Image 1 (cartoon, one colour):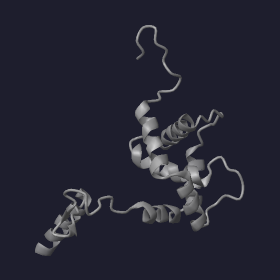
Image 2: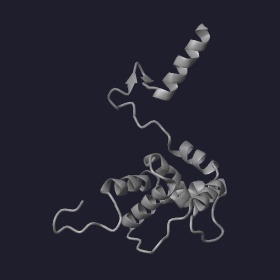
Image 3: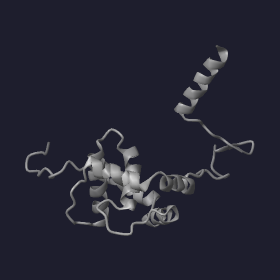
Image 4: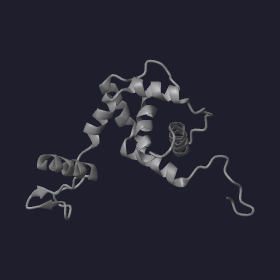
Length: 157
């Protein structure tokens, strides 16, 4: 709620939402996404409301805003991208059906290629605590550990 004399913005935009979207475009620059889409053969041959590059950013944003509805994630994505780039064109949030069709058109191959191109170790041999006895230290995530525990239970039975 705004304080006395303060105007409430028309939409509940929060700075962290814009920063999260900005991080997406810094980590995955548009040129990288366009190259991945070309490699996967997913470039558009016509202008669409949901171009392939936007759909890639959308799928990535779903991970950032996992608790939000699909349409809200799309709204935050477009508002964040427009806020960062100064884009002021009116844009209506697509329906769930349109979003679903756009994701189906994109397929999984561009995201697999993006993962292969960007999921690399960040630590270098000079990074303190990243290596022990010349070997890179790796910590499995919780899902992996739970799977190992479940597998151990099956073996004991």
